Image (cartoon, rainbow, N blue to C red; front, side, top):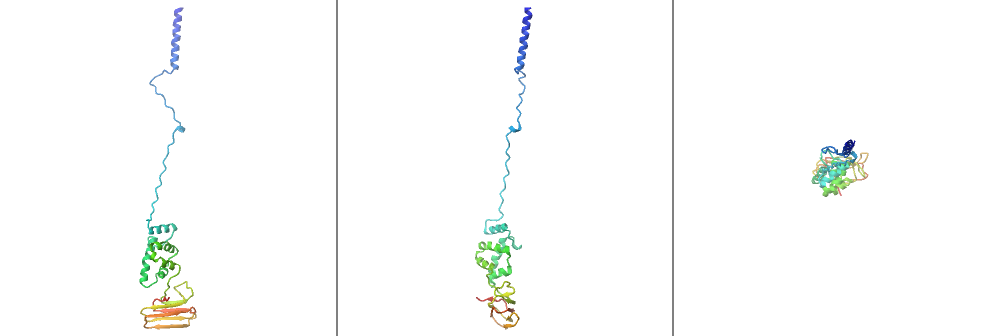
Length: 230
C-alpha cells in the first residue's frame, strides 16, 4: 500500500508540472510574435505639396512704348489695324507731323482732318505723345481740343461764326493764298447768292480776301490753299 501511494504522488507531481508548463507559455521558441495591427486613425497623414504657380511674364518691355501698349491693352483702346501696336500709331504721327510742316501744312490741321482720330486713338495720343513725342505734344493737345489753323482749298463754304464742319463751313476773317495764281477766281456772296465782291486773277503771286461775318458764302476756284492771316 505504501508503494502505490508514492507512485500516485509522483503522477500528481508530473501532471502538475505539465499543467504549469502549458500555462507559462513555454511553447516553440522559434514561433514569430505577431506585429500589432495599425489602425488608419493611428497613421501619420502625408502632406501633399501644393503646385507652385508659374509667374506670368509681362509681354511688354519696360520702356515708354511698352508702358503705352500695356495701358492701352488694359483700357481696351484700339487703333487702326494698319498698326501692330498703339505705340506704332503714335510713332507714325510723331514722324508725320514735322513732314507736314515742311510741306507748308499746319500739323494740327493735318492730324484732325487727314487722320481724324477716333475716341480710342485720341486716348492713345493723349497717353503716348507726352513721353514718345514730347516736342509735338503741345500742338497735338491743342489740335485735339479743336485749336488749330484751318486752311481752305477750292470749293464753296458757308460763313459760320463757329464752324463745326470745316469741309463746308468757314469762319469770318482774313485769308491769303500764295503761289502761281493763274486763273484764280474767288467770290463773296450773300446767302441768297448775290455777289458782294469777287475777282479773277490771270496772273498773281498773292491774293488776300477778308470775309465779313455778314457774308453768306465764300467760293474759290483754281486758287490753291487759303490760310488765315493772324
